[in-house]
Image 1 (cartoon, rainbow, N blue to C red):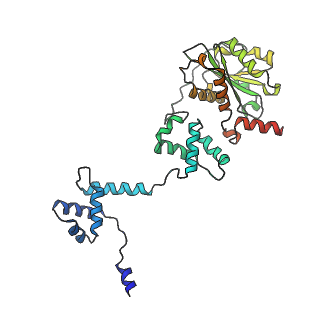
Image 2 (image 1 turned 90 degrees about the vertical axis):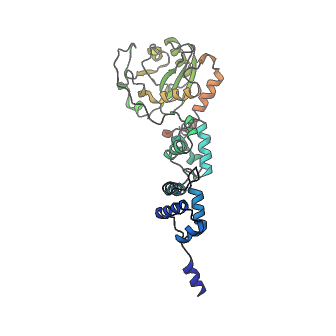
Image 3 (image 1 turned 120 degrees about the vertical axis):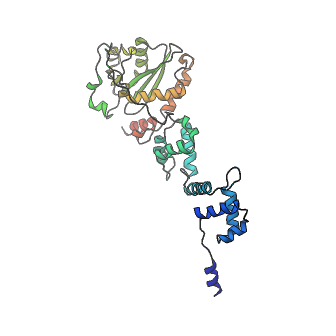
Amino acid sequence: MNSNNTTKNKRKYRVLSPDERGEIMIGLRCGESIRSIASRLDRNPSVISREIKTNSTEDEMYQSFWAQIRSNQRRRKCRQKERISDSIIRQYMHEKLKSNWSPEQIAGRIRIDKPGKQISHETIYQYIFKKDPSLVKYLLCGRKTRKKRKNKRTKRVMIPCRTGIEERPTEINNRSEYGHWEADTAVSKQSKAALMVLQERKLGLTILQKIPRCAPEEMKEALIDSLCDFPAKMRQSITFDNGQENRKHYELHSEIGVKTFFCNPYSSWEKGSVENAVGLTRRKWPKKTDYALISDEEIAMLEYQLNTRPRKRLGYLTPMEYTLSVAFTA
């Protein structure tokens, strides 16, 4: 019988209602004691005391309206789950973001590096923007919104013997064959020197080389120097934009047997692989960098870093890993 009485006398936890908070406010304004308010509301005095202490405003005044808002906010917050509660995943994400990996690369590669662990790239973005905005600086594009693409413009192209990208074979477009490259340059107003960037479309290999100036002869010589040691199967074509440094492209065919194709005017996105690679070099050396002051060792180090980043289209293998796997299975 005692156990039944104990069960009967037990009270389940009840959140204070807006009406009860109104009664607390009225009681305090009338000088009523906490025990008297608690007795009138059939509550424990400690509940009333804690409510007044927790939900009073900054001037130590208890107002039922603001008390209700604060209580609702606190209840919503306590029910929210940590976006990335796994410390191993969180540490891995921080390390790779600081190594200039994208959220999608991190989400794809973590299954390889940390078996049994997985995370969505969207979760990483939400964590960065809502939980830790200090990580935004490690994203390739620091803006939350994208700029609208401008309308296409038409202009006469001054490239002799030019073959448009619309004539490029299907095996190049769908990346089903090796040896097809995209080329571009990263230039700076601080010096005449520039950085030539080459990227193979299927393997994702990146080649960087400094050139004394962004001019046709220098660009041609850099391309020949970069590709001449590759077997013929690995230097079949190069896709350019319509920059004037590419005017001597036709000489590449006679010297190293490379075919050349050109994007449409003001459509550099048609060679998006190398454009992305140029963007990654900009993270290391921004637009106002004097390329003349950059050593060959620094360029080689960045080239190595780019070739050891996981790629989605390679199943999150790095270009080096993928190239080795192809070489051993060939």
